Amino acid sequence: DGGITQSPKYLFRKEGQNVTLSCEQNLNHDAMYWYRQDPGQGLRLIYYSQIVNDFQKGDIAEGYSVSREKKESFPLTVTSAQKNPTAFYLCASNISPQGLGGYTFGSGTRLTVV
Amino acid sequence: KQEVTQIPAALSVPEGENLVLNCSFTDSAIYNLQWFRQDPGKGLTSLLLIQSSQREQTSGRLNASLDKSSGRSTLYIAASQPGDSATYLCAVMILTGGGNKLTFGTGTQLKVEL
Image 1: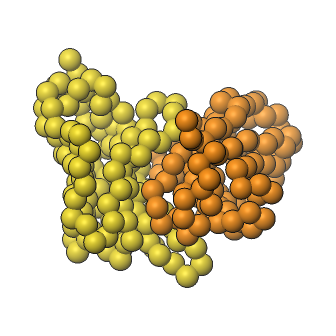
Image 2 (image 1 turned 90 degrees about the vertical axis):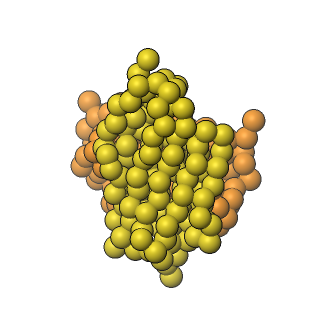
């Protein structure tokens, strides 16, 4: 079955530590996205990539970094510069590089700072 | 700046009722609108995608309508079931010069009771 796989499902980070969230898709979609979801707020865009080896900042990119070395993979690193990283992180993809089709989402990673 | 509002924030209905969820947006120049369902602790599942040129889309017991000029969309759920209990999110896409943007509402949390 085609879809998006996010791992791990739960992740715990110590203060000052960098952690990487995995996102893999086998849909052959061009565009991939990272969103952050906090209680009572709409999803907010962190980074997105329209094609391999290219990505752009979203609305809340500070303290995060990404790479897009393969079409299938779009990992997100939460760095120590992100002061409030506890949240639910969702990866998404779109067949259109411009994001004009329907979006497909992964099952999410819940990150908690301990 | 596009703002998306969903009212009510929470809704509880008895099984079998027909119900309507509302989504309003401030910028009517949208490209498309998508309705999603989110179960607790899970990712988003796409329900319906409506292009700006369309008035409605139907899938099973779900019907979504779009009135671009008034900045509104409704999701109609017929004969509700306990399995419909979830948070329903709408998201609108607008075209921008520097990367098209999907803006989410904060959702309506639906509980269908036996």
